[in-house]
Every structure is written in structure tokens, then in C-alpha cells.
Length: 332
Image 1 (cartoon, helix red, strand yellow):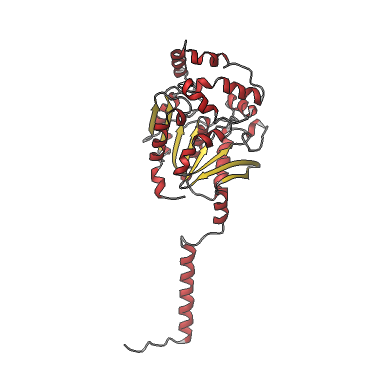
Image 2: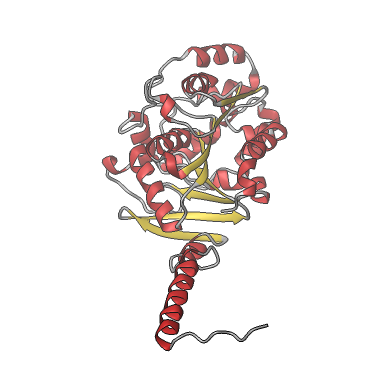
């Protein structure tokens, strides 16, 4: 083997500088290099309860489980997210599950101005939280009015949602009452529902009165009160915020599903799950959304009401996990 040629000193210095620059560029782009924001994001999504101030309001959220990120959007009318954190806990075996108390509910700050309690404001809150968490995309699941918020978020921020699950979703501006009338007719004379119907129009001016009314009418929210009311009641929060409910009832600031021609803009995978006997959010809105979003998947569960993960856990969890399964190979 011949002798190794000696480079001139000036050339050697240039060569060393060039190699150092290339190595620096490689390391800067390397997946093994942790950006300065990463430790903050990791801490923000560590297991347990957290608080973050966004848009001038302190929001509380809980993190549990491990795996790809799944954010749960609770309704904005004052019930908070604890019932979802408890009821959807089995998902923590497959995902890092984040449940957020919307403003004016749960452990988040109370907000009294109606104009700051709109669903669109809660869409903005979710986007601000995403920035706090330091994540680019996540799977999103919304329940009831939370489904409307989640849908609006996916419409406005499609690049940040990988997959969308709408459970017993509300559809703002949808006023058809045919499903309600049919369900009420089927239940007529059924003693399991009689007392609950008598409390539908009770006064609910205070937080305590509203929670009492929710518990009294709970049989209407399930398919089989004898089998399901106790299990649902065990997940309910200790308090609700009636001021949010008042804004919710007026429809102030509600997001609207786009026209059929605009629904094609939602290109992410969408699954809709609804109970056949869902009283507050009947199957009709889910069917309409399904028609408007090409390629969406609709599941209507028999013998289930508004809390499908409790009454049909045998269907709900396998369906959701399978639908979100592409996430399992991608990590956070």
C-alpha cells in the first residue's frame, strides 16, 4: 500500500471546515437531535393534570395512557370533560389520551361574557393548546356538542388533524325533530322513562339545579335505564356550569357545517358513531354529516343512547381503535 499523500495545510483547514459544516447540518436535521421546545412539549403531555393559559383563560387538561396522541373534545355547555376521561379510559391502553375542560367548565377558569363562550372560541382554544403541546398533528374525538367543535376545528385546521371521530354529535342549525318524535313515541307508556319526561322542563337557573335536572332526566339519554343509568351516573361530574348552558341554548356563535359542495374540503378520515336511541343528538345529524363528507364511515349502534362507550362498549372500543389503528405505527 502506498504512502498516504499529505494535504497542504491551507487545503486541510478548508477540508476540516467543510466537514464540520456538513456534520453540523446533518445533526441539525437529525431526528436524534432534540429541539429546545421538545422538553417543554414532553412535559406538557406528561401523565397527570395540567394547566395552560391560552387566549387569556386558564384551561385544565388531563393526560393518561401511552401511544399516539388522541385529543378528546368535550361539549362546551358546562359539563366539563371528566365524564369522558372516566368513560373513555380503556383507550389509554392504545393512545396518549388528552381530555380538556373547556373554558367555564370543570377545573378551567370561569368566563362570564357570553361572547367569549362560543363554540368557535373553543375551536381557537384547541388550536392554542396544540401550540402549547408542541405537536403538529393528532387524532381528534368529539362527543355531543364537542363533536360540533371538533368538526369545526378539522374544517379550519385540516393539517393538524390526522383522523376525526364524532360520537353522538350535534349538528348546529339542524332543526329536524322527526327522530325525537319517533323515539318519544316508542318510549310512550314505558315506565322506565315516565318520571324522566316529567322533569324535562324543570327550572335550571343555578348550577346545582341544572345538575339535578341532568340526573333526573338521565334515563332519556340511554337506551336501557335499568342497565345503564347507574354506570353513566358514576362518570358524571360533581358540578356543571349553567352560564355556559345558557349560551349553548341560544345558539350564539355556533359553528355551521359547510354546504355539501364545501364538505369535500374535509379530506381526512372521519368516523361517526351514534346510538340508535340517542335522545339529545339523534342519528339524523350523524347521517347528514356522513352524506356530506365523502368516504366517511357511519356506525349506528342498536340498543344504545348518548353514551355509546358504556352501553355498547363491545362495539365502540374495537371500532374506534381499529379506525385509529394507522396512528399506532406513527408514534406521537
